[in-house]
Structures are given as C-alpha cells and as structure tokens.
Image 1 (cartoon, rainbow, N blue to C red):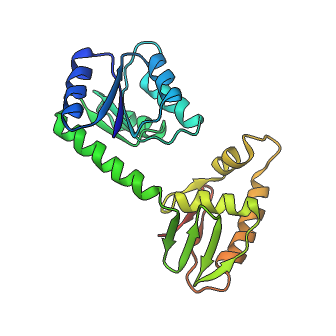
Image 2: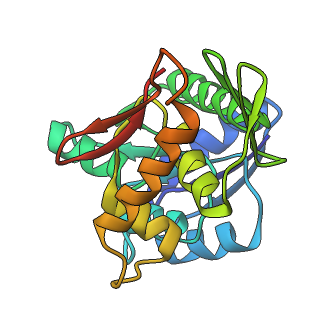
Length: 222
C-alpha cells in the first residue's frame, strides 16, 4: 500500500512513517498543504493521512481541492479539534475518517486498513440492492434480471444515487455534479429526470427504491 502523510509536525510525521514502513507500506511525507497537493496530483496513493492545521493551505482546503479534482483517494484527517461541528466540517470537506490527536499508531493503522477494505469494496463493478443490479462498468441496470434501458443522463443520475445509497442526495448536488454548476438548470429539470427514473425503476415493482425527501432531495433505500 502506498501512503502519503501530510503533517507539519515532523515528530508525528516521522513516527507515523516509521510505523507504516514497518508494516511494509510505501510512504511519502511532506510538511505543507501546497507540497501535499503537488504530490497528490503527481502520484497515485492508496490513502492520505492529512493534518487539519497545516501552514499555508489547511488540511480542510487540501481535501476540498482534491475532491473538486475528482480524486477519490481515501483521506484520514488528523486533528486536535473535538467539537462535533469541527468533525462535521472535516467530513463534509471530503475526508473519509478522522483521528484525534494525540493518537496511537495502532489506531491509525486500523483506520487505514478499514478504509482500504471499504475502497476495495467500492471498486467492484456490480452494485446490488434487493432485486436491483447495476453494472457500473457497462453502465447497465437490471431489476429482477430484466434490463432497464436508461438514457445517458438518467443513468448518471441513478448511478450518483446508487453510489450514495442510504444517504440523501440534494438536488443542487445533482445539478453541480452532472451539469457542472450550470446556472440555467433548475430543480424542475431534475424532477423531470427523477419522474422518468421512477417510472423505469420502480413503477412495476412492489418495493419502491427511489425516495423523495421533501425539501431536501432524493435517496435510494438499502
């Protein structure tokens, strides 16, 4: 496994680096957000350990920037902040997990391994929920083994929902992801696509998978 550590406290960085290397990992270390971004753009990592309080560009900003670039590498945020609002901010910036300072290396390692297993699971081409099956490589959808024909945009919206199954996907997020912040796209356009999706995915089935969360967005039940 190839790990990047972005931590300005050299003692913590070197401690973590030594621990990972003893586990057989390949480790890069940098001490600033700017250098971290350069390495992330240049190299491919299996996980990133990212300090919140970095000089220059903060860990929060680094995380936001890499997510905006569609880099999905798992990120663990290191932080001394314990308030719930701070934890929520970190997770909403794109972090997958966080570890509170001071921490034991055993905890950090366990969280890295957990994220690695989760990432490997997400890489599977087939997603199944109840009698629904989605092949993300072939961009095909089946229900009760019967193929459902979706337009390209319908499929993209449905894949966004299915990959975030169990969570509400807001209308503005659908617009931002699929129409790249096009200001001319309204919520009515999304509602029209969702109407078509419901007709194709749910209408002839007793169990309805697509749910509308009033004034919030949509979700796929698991």
